[in-house]
Amino acid sequence: METTSRVGARGAGEADASAAGTPDGQGGSGNRRSVDGYLLASFPWYGLDEAYTGPRWLMQVGAAADGTVEHGSTGHGAEPQLRMGRVEHDTATQRFAVVVTVASRPVRRSADGTGVLEATSVSSAAWLAGSGLLACTWPSQMERALRQDWLDQQTALAWELADHMEDPAWSTLSLPVDGVPTDFRYRESEYGWVLAGSAEGVLLGAYGRGMSAYGMGFAVIPDIRVYDAD
Image (cartoon, rainbow, N blue to C red):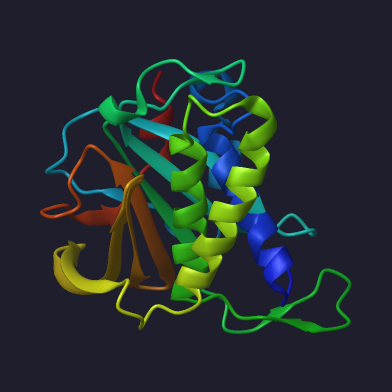
């Protein structure tokens, strides 16, 4: 998320989404990043609150060219597994929720110090969440040659949706963040759901499938290392 252009923002989303796997790559625990990158962040990480008692796992952080951590994701539920370009289980049975934490950057300087970058926004969180969902849920029956075209098309649509969050495609959903009711922009699709909003000092996105967003709550993670317990 180190550019003012759509192309740059899209690239940041793809980097984050790769933690869940891409149509031609590997995902799941084999591609899981270590906790080290998370510990370098200058902002707090968020996950589902203590009402959720299921599995928790790390995904990936995204950093600027100078190494500053800009965003990252934490997973909950059954970790999506991709191996050798094929989904190891039917996407219709997937049950997971991923929380994306994005640093709030009203003013950001480019890595070389010569310019100012676009501020992060709720749209940034929505884009990262939308592209992450697509990376987890691409159609397994699709021919390999068509997968990248499909992903490019769908991620372009996800960007347009994230850039117009007042459109009817989005509704408002109130969920607790550290116990405080907070409004999020929310939408559903055949692939799952995406939401985005803000918290104290950060922007929050989330996406999931098979686990309803209604009734979820978010909270600061006291020690991110608990997500790396296994």
